[in-house]
Image 1 (cartoon, rainbow, N blue to C red):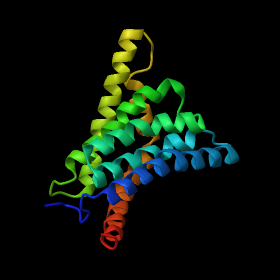
Image 2 (cartoon, rainbow, N blue to C red):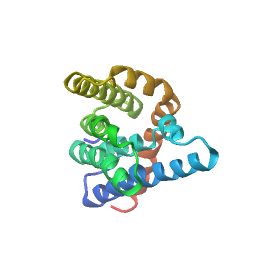
Image 3 (cartoon, rainbow, N blue to C red):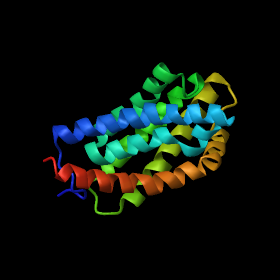
Length: 182
C-alpha cells in the first residue's frame, strides 16, 4: 500500500530525477540571477532554500535511495554548473540535503501527512548538518558550526515555510499527473 497514488515505476523515477535537476540546479540558478539583478546577492537563495525542495519531492516520489542520491548530487551539480553553493559549504549541504531526500523517502509510505514528513526531514537534515559542521569544526579547529545552522535556520524561515507548503502540493500534483501516464 502506498500513501501516495504514485506507483513505483521507471517513469516516476525518471520524472523524479528531472525534478531533482530542475530543483537543484535551474531554480537556484534563476534565484541567484534574480538576486544579482535586485542587489540581494546570494541572500535570496539562503532565504528561499530552493535546492532543498527537490530532494524532498524526489524522496517522497521515488524512495529513499534516489532521494539520497539526488540530495547529495544536487549541491555538487549546482556547484559544478553554476558555482554555487559556496565551496566551503558543499560538504555540509550534501549531508543535509541528502538527509532530506533519504528521510522523506523512508517516510513516504507511512500513513501520515506529507507536511509532517517534510518537517521531520527538515529537523533530521538540519541536525545532521549541525553535527557535520561541529565535527569539521572540532577536527579542523575552525569556527563554523552549530551557530551556522541556527543562523541559517532563522534566515531560512521563509524557505522552510515554503517547503512545508510546496512539497506536499507538488506531491499532490505529481501524483495526479502520473495517474494519467501509467
